[in-house]
Length: 160
Image (tube, rainbow, N blue to C red; front, top):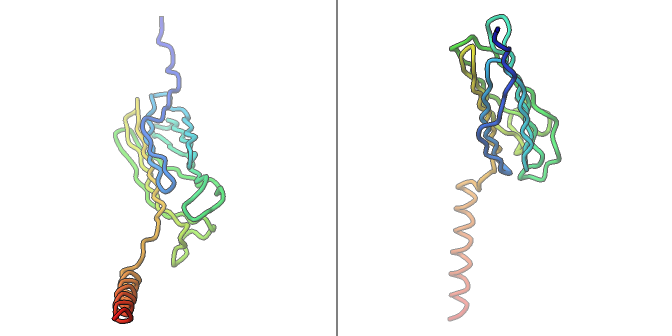
């Protein structure tokens, strides 16, 4: 009696899904497969296939809403290839306004990291997306503080 072929099994093993951040971990067996993540603020999908002695890991992620009132964006496509006991790692910037690589980046831009590693029998992939929320600049905070102190001193002087 021969061995039965492995059935595809690809699962999302960990996740963080917030308004500004996405972090997903996937694993798969020797047959590869596809796993889909449908979250509150993000959707994503990953497919792993093994052919010609290498893994091809492809997928997409989509921000459903953002901290700046963005509408649902188009899916961002990702892909990488590695040999057994190898890996790949990629980084990039995507922009809600459809201006990848434009400088300066718009507030809607977000940074991503995508990578995978494994053997001929199993693999693990990680996707992390950070959607920055701008903080007040130090100069703006200094001006606001000086205005507050000036208002306080003026008000105090008027009370005498």
